[in-house]
Image (cartoon, rainbow, N blue to C red):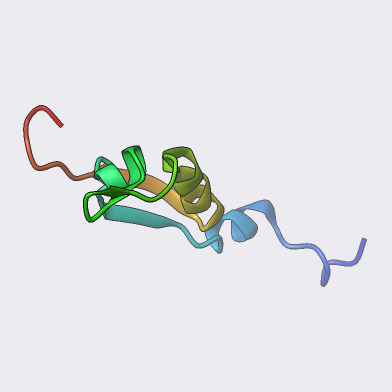
Length: 70
């Protein structure tokens, strides 16, 4: 193996871009129920939103809420 084509493991993982979403409003009914402006537009896509986040490099989410119950 040539040293010019192989990177050390720590350099590879250190250069990977990671994101933290500090305002994930995933409790909104547009995700939980598919409702926009009071009308049902689609089925819940909560799981798909999480999958897209992970695929984009999001490593942590801080969920925002408007009430203690949420």
